[in-house]
Length: 105
Image (cartoon, rainbow, N blue to C red; front, side):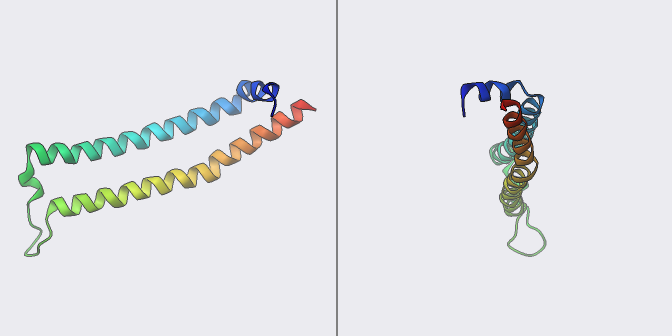
């Protein structure tokens, strides 16, 4: 692609929409992960007794459940991002490229 095409793409409102949506989603998911991740570390540092509470008569503790929950949630958030990227963001990208190719002719 030529630099003219890149310039046309950057000026297109769909490009700004694509970048805005992608950044908003990325920052939202990053915030969720960081809050939960560091929240667990702060709990370990300042109130570890909460994580040692046994659930019933089993060996399972709240710390184990929270740790597994975070692990599964982080995978789910990654899958969510990939699904959105492969559907919504790719569709916007394709529409943007089609418009830019039409403008070139």
